[in-house]
Image (tube, rainbow, N blue to C red):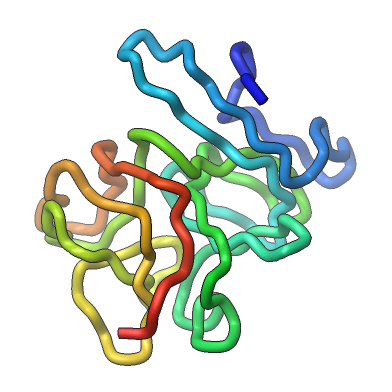
Length: 166
């Protein structure tokens, strides 16, 4: 579904209710740079910190930030993931990016063009393959993240999902 005119940073509280059906995917083709961006509408199962924080999305389209528990073997393998476009309160509603160039929260010194893995830090990924943590397939960085934890605005999403255990 084309979503020209949607505001992917728009969020709603649980009291306001959902603006769209959970799981709705919108493509925004009007970016001025020729790129298509895709977003999925979710319900936050916990507070989501802000722009670029990576979330795992369950079959009911409830999202929680990725970490060693939410993506653990048997808990998240194969599930979709997406990056928040804004902070979403627990029980609230908002959009996660699943395709195109966007922002992604990384730990210090995440390298360009390497495999990315979930971390113990909620919503952040890193290029260090720590034993027992999951590969975040379908996401790459176009530039390296500097010497501290940051939101990298040069990430590329290609319908990412929780991959194999490191």
